[in-house]
Amino acid sequence: MPTVEYETKFEDLVAAKRIADSMYVQWKRRHRAGMRRAQADLLPLYERTRAFRMYCSNVIPGLLQTPPYAAALMTMITKFQGTPDDLAEAVASRIERSRVLHQGEHTFAILLEEAVLRYRLGNAEVMAGQLAHLLSVLSLPSVSLGVIPAAAERTMWPLEAFYVFDGELVAVETLTAEVNVTAPGEARDYVKAFGELTGSAVFGAAARTLITDAMSEFRR
Image 1 (cartoon, rainbow, N blue to C red):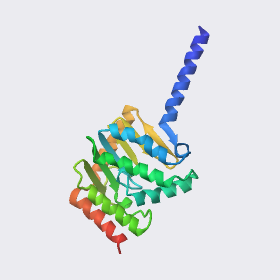
Image 2 (tube, rainbow, N blue to C red; image 1 turned 180 degrees about the vertical axis):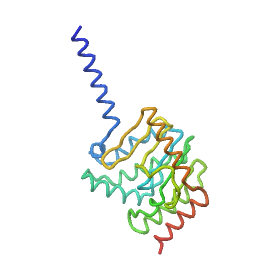
Image 3 (tube, one colour; image 1 turned 90 degrees about the vertical axis):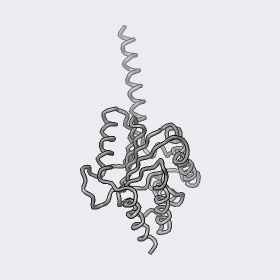
Image 4 (tube, rainbow, N blue to C red; image 1 turned 45 degrees about the vertical axis):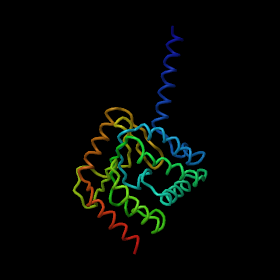
């Protein structure tokens, strides 16, 4: 009997470790063979998710990136992490994933901090093109794109970028790792935070004005 009890506890520990490993994934580990595979691995999750909530305080979210913007960002990441360079394939895989914006029954609630519109990744032409693409996304019926003005009164402080998938899984991005949150209580906290952040955002014509103003700075 003691042996059976020991084996059961050992199996529980192994299972717990596997869960922990899937919850906290280092970027260097995920990108150890390059970034393309990491992009492709996300496609099934994006295809089956119906309701997306995305909050980005640092960069334009991957689904809305243009190829030049994605290339500029991925070049930085690859150099910083010291991981293999498969830039062309990784960019193509990321752009392929964006087809969910136009296919299937998905809804996208996306929030950007205004500063994201001005953080320069790539040259002025790259940024102007990226912001022009955001303007086109505003017209998609499945997308609600809000911008939180820098001067907005807030009930929620700026957070790390996070992505909520159907309210059940939350992917939180840090410098060194992606943290996948599945505990219902924690997931609800992120949904609550998203709601608070939404209250500070502007949409429609007001969001278009903020994007256009930022774009004009890159076209001078």
